[in-house]
Length: 313
Ligand code: BDR
Ligand code: CA
Image (tube, rainbow, N blue to C red):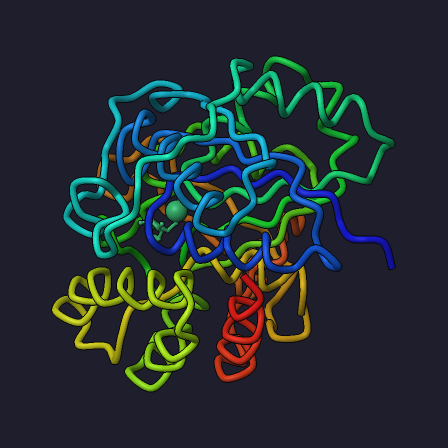
């Protein structure tokens, strides 16, 4: 089968970085047409820089990187330096990128790319707030029905929230954008915290990354060394959750994940539960299903895949 053509929309972020590395290491499965940066974990200037740092770490300087929206649709930006550090990629010491940032705006790149390809051949992979994707849908409604699928990291049902008691970070930062995407009618696959909190980098798993002995393996281990302290302190968990790599792993090995096709709506008005993903997991509402909401992962299979693929870079 020909590799799936994808656009990665991202706010790196250590876990975004691993998701990008996995995709770039898997050309037989995914063809990364471009990486679009959005403001999220850290401001846009840094996410656009970090995306290029990762491409250079992977030795894939031919992948175009675009900067997109620098703030949510209708709110001030909330960032997550408390998780990812000041740079967004704290941990390893990586050189500033030499490869250029593309001049085109990320939203224009998304619109142009979807329009230029046959219907049902482009998959969007958002790993951060959904601002770029929602803006593209608002500006160019004709592209919505052309998108093959959206596979995104965001939301939670059983795990509820990580940035507020009820909301996951990516959805909380731009709930209006998430609302537009979930109501778009596109085939959506969601990797919520319910899954990503089971994708934990335990010590043996991080040792396996480090033992690759390559710049990529060592950098991923060092990113995890930094990133894990937040979740270990907060949840008492065994290691850092690799949220965003669940998205790119799904494109390669969908069999690693199980979930339910259910209705998912986003809270956009209540201050108390802003950004909550109200997933009708038990199918009690009769509202039409609009997303494949994942609930479980074969974590050993996932880390096996990750280690095997990262070894190629
Ligand atoms: C999500 O928020 C960010 O901190 C991570 O990169 C991930 O995309 C997890 O809630
Ligand atoms: Ca992210």
